Length: 157
Length: 296
Image 1 (cartoon, chains in turn brown, green):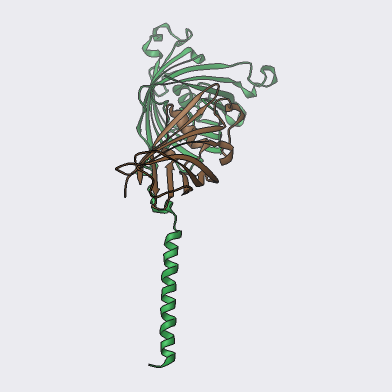
Image 2 (image 1 turned 180 degrees about the horizontal axis):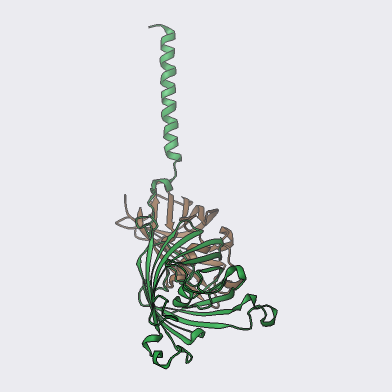
């Protein structure tokens, strides 16, 4: 389990790069390979204050949809994963962003170490999939596909 | 013990076991997300009470933010009831340019220049109190102080009065705001304005006004704004209370504010204490503010 997981996203276009970082992700991994992750949207920090305001007010509508979540099962879970090495796994479940649920299979890496489990993942979220409208006027500044990276350090409860 | 009694026991036992099983599967069906607990994100200052540092004429609670340069170009056209000859006032534009700079997240300094009476301004704005998302602080209080110096050569009737000190006026404001819902924000703005020189000896040097401003969000990037300033000691000769209605249109780093107002001047002394357009006569001015932020 973690309460301070790291989630970052990156939007790259020809005109502008936008990135934001969140160190408030929480996550739970059960012994049977089920997992649940939650990211408070208001926890994303941007380089520019105005970006943060626009992100929360106009795009993610974070007062209405305060959390992004991902819940499901690790498809190729093996409770006896050898510790100390990274294992490629497929996390299969429901990704909810902006109140819109999507079934996703996200490839990730997982490693058991002496303290607990480490999880790393990088994937893409299409804004259209989650009904996040991007007006024409800013379309050259905000990418339609947002790269997300996740870095979690799960400790026993 | 009779046979039927034994049967009853068995049925009760079965029912109990069943209940335990149902209970058990219910616990299993409860998602891991619920197990994470409902830890609410920490309280944070409420964002976007207003979209710009001004509601229309009057300052809002917002400051540009640390190391942000906020640049405003504002136009105020002539009186609409001048009619077709001056294209309903569009022939006569007066202008204001202003630069505000955020020294910290909550403190900013600014300078401005209006063509109206060739006025310079310098100002200080401080978000003394920020409304919090968990209502631990239910309102925001921003303090604003501005000094204005008119530079027009035709200023004052007699040469004797045409001193620098007499060109100065000051306004001090407390901007008390609350964002009630995602869509609706309200501001109450008591202001005190001091003029070193007034037009007539009967005019007061000090004027208190009480303002009310509001924002209603119509769409993601569009809001309806209005403000009204009430001269508490009554209306001096020819003066009116200032009433303005407009919209904010936000596009990325720009905010466009379009409005109709009975105030010609765009700095505090002018619109708070020297508004003279009458709404009922159509003595109104169309204007717009265009703001742009630059980050450093």
